[in-house]
Image 1 (cartoon, rainbow, N blue to C red):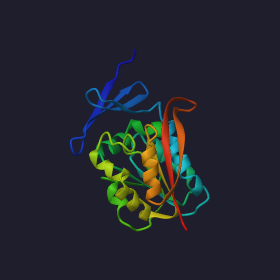
Image 2: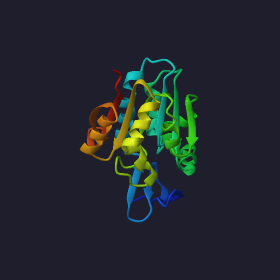
Image 3: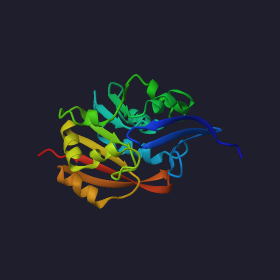
Length: 227
């Protein structure tokens, strides 16, 4: 068996732990150090792709759309968003950890066909929260895959995103009829209630980790309801 080769490591802010970046042949992995397990693998990305397809479905013919992607990961969410929007649209991706951006600029970028090189892509290094609490309608779609879902795993500040206060602030930065799509490792009924309380029209979809098989993940689709 081909052994794993460690390519890099990075600290998650606020004592969130350490990321380990490894390669085995053409397969890449990003995992938490210790026994906390794998976060991402370059062979398992279907649910990240569906996050973008579902979250941007209303933008396929919208000129000058602006999409925000929270969490670069291995680039699959960003790449799928770029495939959904028009040539004159813009996709901003916010990534908390600078090393993740650098890994995507290297060989890892080939997995998702180098979406960082697309001229429609703008990278913001830092907490996506700073783009979500401006209270200015800016985005036609917001795609969030920044943690394990409503129950934060790697970065405690992510809990704000899933709180009622955070969801209400995100509502304000969506344009009319904008869509908030959130990836989650599993279902969360109380989170759906929280989204509705914040004013969204809510649906949930199940997405498999691999197309047609693998773990079942949940995508929350929350539309900005316009009276």
